[in-house]
Image 1 (cartoon, rainbow, N blue to C red):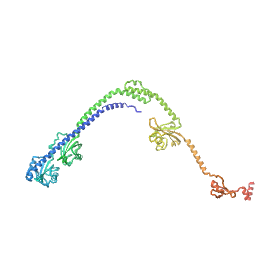
Image 2 (image 1 turned 90 degrees about the vertical axis):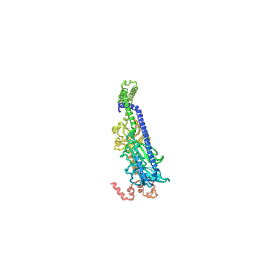
Image 3 (image 1 turned 120 degrees about the horizontal axis):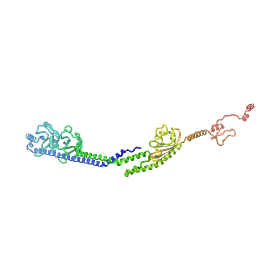
Length: 567
C-alpha cells in the first residue's frame, strides 16, 4: 500500500488557492484579448483612413493633370498644330511644374509632333494611355513605364484627346509624371517605425513605396502575390494582416482609385503598420496586469501555507500516522487525537470508529479465510483460480502445490501443462462467458495432464474475485484409475469383438440326402457335406475310416489292425 504523501496536501492547498484566483487570470487574459482586438480594429480604421486620404490625393493629381491637358487641348496653338509654339508652351509648363517629366503632342498614329523634352523614339503608339485615348477618344491613364526622355526615369503617364471643330480626333496630348511626385503628398513622420505607404498600377506593379526599400520592395516590380490577390479580388477598400515582402508582419489596407465610380481601378493605394506597434499597448497592459496577478498569487500561497500549517498539516499528520498503523493491521490508536472539535476532529473520530469496527471484524475475516483454506486444502483435488485475461494464477490449494509446486502468480498453461506454447481451449473465455461477458455456468472437461501424466476431470466456471475482476475457478479430480480401468475394459471388449467376428455358426435344420449324405445349399443344389460345413464354419476336414467301415470294406486291413492292437 502506498503511503500517504503529506506533500500532496500542500500541493492541494496550493491548487485550491490557484483555482480561487484562476477566474481573475481568465478575466485578465480576456481583457488583454479584448484590448488586442480593439487595437486591431483601431489600427484597421487608421490605415483605412490613411489609404482613403491617399486615394483622394491620387484623384486630385489625376484631376489636375486632366484639367491641364484639357486646357492645352483648347489652346489655338495646339488646335492649329503649331508645333514650335506647342513645344515652347510645353517647356514652360514643365519649368513651372517640375513634378512632370514630359508633355508631348502626338498625331493619331502615335507619332510625336511636339515635346517639352527630346525623346529617344518618335512614336508612342505602343503606350497604354495613348492606345486607349485613340480607341476610346477620351482621357486615359497609363501604367508603370520607363520614360523615353534622356533621364529614362520610372514614370506614370496620362493622355487626352484633341478634337477639331467637327469633334473629329486630330491629335493626342500626353503628360508623364515622375513617380517621386507622390512623396510631396505623403508625410510618414507621424507614423510608427516600419510603416509604409505605396501605390501600384492596375497590374500590381509597384509605382511608389515610401520610405524606399529597393532591396525588398523595388519600384517597377510586382508586389507580393498573396497581397495582390486580396486587393484585386476585392470590390472596395479592405484590410488584412500578413507578412510583407520585407518579412515584417503588418496590418495592411488598400483602396482602389477609379476614373469613374464603378469603373476598373487604374491605381491601388496601400498603407501598412507593423503588428508589433499595434499590439504593444495591449501587451504592455497585459504584462503589467499579469505581474500584479503573479505577486498577488504568491502572497496568497504564502498565507495559505502559513495558516494551513497549524490548522490542517499537523492534524493531517496524525491521520497519516493512524492510517499507516491501519495498513499494518494495528487498529489500536491513541484516543487523545480525537479531541479536536472542528471538521478535522470529526474526521479523526470517524477514523477511531472505523478502527474499532475493523478490529472487531478482523478476527471474523481471519477465521473465514482459515475455513476457506481448510476446505480447499482438505480436498484430494486440484483447486486453483486464474485471471481470465492474463492467465495468471492467483490461488492454488495444497493438493495443487504438492503436484505442481507453488505456482502462484505464474501463467497457468505454462505451469500446469508441459511444452504448451499458448493457452488451451479451456483457458479461453468462450466456454465460460457469453457474448456480453457474463458467466455461462459450469463447463466440465476431461484431459490428461502433460506434467504428471494423470487424467483429471475438471469443473470450470467464471466467478467474480475479491478484487472485482472475473476469474476462472477450477476444481479438478484425479480420474487416472478410472481411465486405466476403462482402457483395460476397452481392450477386452476389442478382443471379444475380434473373436466373435472370427466365429461362424451353423443354425437351423440341414437338408441332407438319406443315401449319399450330400447337403442342399441355399441355391437348391446338393454339395458334399465337407464343402458345405467348411463354407459356413471355416472348419477343415481330414478323411479317415472308422473301424466298422474298415471291417466292412477292407476286412484284411481290419484284421491286421486288430492283431496289432491285441499284441
